[in-house]
Length: 263
Ligand SMILES: C[S@@+](CC[C@H](N)C(=O)[O-])C[C@H]1O[C@@H](n2cnc3c(N)ncnc32)[C@H](O)[C@@H]1O
Image 1 (cartoon, rainbow, N blue to C red):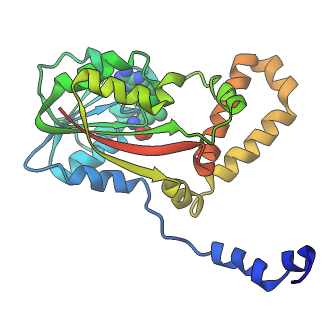
Image 2: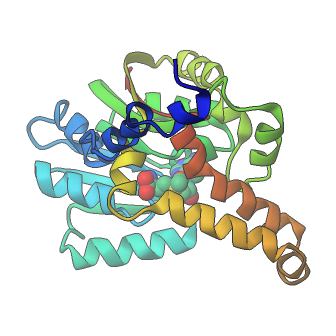
Image 3: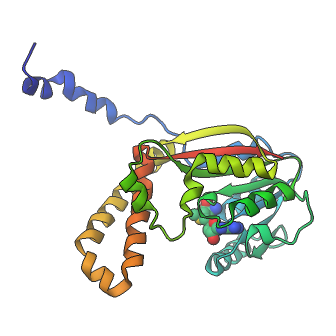
């Protein structure tokens, strides 16, 4: 048996890294659009609950000859959504609502698909939100909810650091809390798809966003005093937490997951 140092530098060990330089051909974020397509027939009505710039709703409406409503409470996001929808020439097909999805003034059962991508993490009143989704969903319709949940790999100190994220509601990152809210609203989990690290691998193989997060994080910490003096501690701690989001998904401390829900 060779000594440990010789083994460390032996081809037997070293060649493992060569294997890891080969892509596993991970799926990217478009897989969520493909998943939605499995549930869309005819001329569906789609709600994008938490639309940001409505980019995903525009794609869904275009692909499926659908109509839709894009809802978001943040004014700047609604401004972007209006611009993008107009640019896409879809102002007749897509209505924009500035407000919480739970305040959308629409009759019950008005949507065949509710697209809820990366939103559950941020919803202040999760029970009111899930109740609204259940109310708005047409019989036979589906909610497609993509979010991230904490795993047992997240250490207590890391969880405490993530709590400084100003946009997130930390309790919503706990899967049992989400499942309770779905059940209380009368929504059933039909499918749970674990995305795991696939979208992260896909993106890293193209534009290296995790590498960028880590570079920014190291610069943030080296400029800590100056950034706190100019922007305040709260912003500093938020940026620190936010810059851990993608790396923690990559490390499996946060699990990216999709729930397909029925009423
Ligand atoms: C991380 S962004 C994701 C945006 C977009 N769905 C995407 O995947 O790019 C979360 C969005 O959810 C919105 N949001 C948070 N709470 C909401 C609520 N109760 N109703 C509707 N949108 C909400 C935020 O304003 C924000 O635009």
